[in-house]
Length: 424
Image 1 (cartoon, one colour):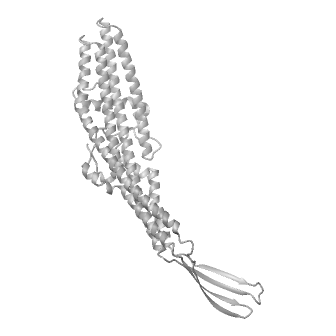
Image 2 (tube, one colour; image 1 turned 120 degrees about the horizontal axis):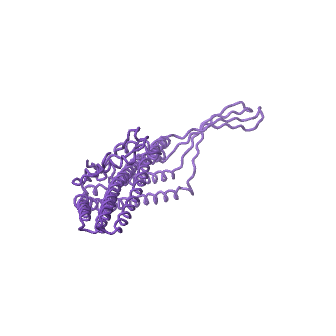
């Protein structure tokens, strides 16, 4: 029989062995025995998401849509062919045929092209923004799955600890050294540990499903997530990144919208100048049996409608775009500062809990159990030590989640500029 006793002198090795034991517990079935377990890494999850996520694919379509609009904006208006007959009697009818070509004045075509080019650029930047957002979503879902997976490992360790407490209490009661009430206390502690373990299993399954969905899959195609929840990245220098807020994708997108709305003002101003229609044709008079050439020119008179309302709206829209750009830059700067502070605080707590508090809590539990076995401590001391250890483990996972949340915020803001390198 395989023993799942964890070594007492190595926290990392203890976690690894516990993870192995939990994996055996979850997949010890005929189907699982015949199926080779598969894992997914953060790199694989990102590759799958970029290839399969339908929202990202839809965002990429916008680039083609904008390209089509840009092409249409540069098209010259089609000529118009007209045919008319005056009088229906064959010996006196007058037949006219004309071709009319609209001629755009005031730079309307160039202004349309300018607007559509800004739209095309904005579509490309929007796709980049969506890609950054998807990357952040995958990182969040992946590390949530890692966290839930680690929570299952720790819940299993807590259950093992509670089982040991019951065994020790039963032994002491049989020896007549303590009251039978101690067994009831130990059993309550074990029941709570079982509930925590079941909740951890449910959280792990849900986290796997969320990760599968964000990568574009309706079902979970992996058995476990490869990695460690404390394999966090190295974040670049804070002042350098804060100085690069203006280069982030959201600010660049806001700037491009300002440029687009400025181009829209030029287009509306160009609309004040009326177009002219030049026509040429031929007219045949059956009564006189002669043909005459026709040349025409028509132009609207901008006496009342000089597009002044649309020009005003376009100007106000451009002002609004500038305000939105300034608000975006201010918001991102504030979010980045908060994320950096949260990141630094979480990393300091993680180091403290992992290197100092968890080992001390683990040793305290071991000492309390040995002391209870020797009759030096009451079982309530063992329970207190166990609860402290469990609370410290929960705090450790919560702090890891806070660090990942800060990382995800920075990923959304900076994207490829972040260049965070995950510590192995």
